Image (cartoon, rainbow, N blue to C red; front, side, top):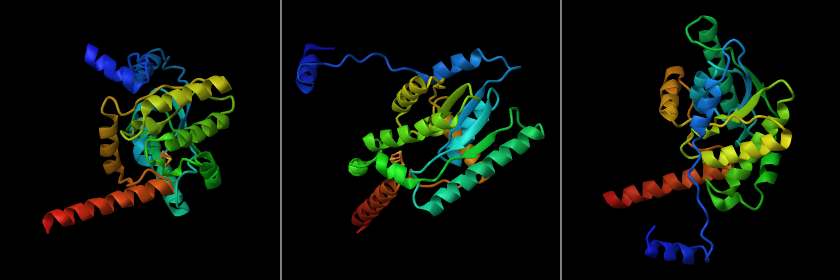
Amino acid sequence: MTAGSFSFLNILFCGKIPLMGPKKNYQSELDKIIKKINIEQPPTLMIHACCAPCSSYCLEYLCKYFKITVYYYNPNISPSEEYRKRVDEEKRLIAALNSEIIWGERQGHPIGIREGNYEPSRFYEAVRGFENLGEGSERCFRCFELRLRKTAEAMGEGYDYFTTTLTISPLKNAEKLNEIGEKIAEEYDLNWLPSDFKKKEGYKRSIELSEKYGLYRQDYCGCTFSKFEREADKARKELQNYEETT
Ligand code: SF4
């Protein structure tokens, strides 16, 4: 760091320059855990899933090593017809993967699914006061925590690990998701499975798999605020295009 950049940071942070360590690589943490797995005794995993496209790669990848139960708890999704559409698509994907596993076309352990309650009021309660902050903000961190906490509570005693498919999205903060997961794991005395599924071309593979299974890909994250933000964004772009071409 040069003297100039040091004094700029000093002003920016009021004399308290935060100590920034190297970023954790959550994919390599996951690699280390997978490496130690005894294939004869696959560990059990409960994975929170947000939607079928994001699940596709995560399930394809993890079912080779873990006995998985998907936990579908997403009270953030609005409206309720959209929720139904996404949960039905998740079930359809799992049925397709399982039939390939059973017929030996795919290597892995059959995948189970449990659906949590659809309780939008819990989501609105969790994000109250943060509704207008936009995607990627504290609103989302609270939304992550609600869903991961519920997954941890749903686990009971039969699972070795829990995690979420959410880290596959380039729009989601994987570091924050892992921090929240680790915090909840500590509180409930559970094991968090670290991940950053977008690494190793995970996101790209999820697009290929979505095409293969003809999965419905929504164009907004899930909540009514993100739907509104996406529509406003589209309208802004349309207006910009119109102005540029007239
Ligand atoms: S944008 Fe997505 S992650 Fe953020 S609050 Fe809405 S549904 Fe939750």
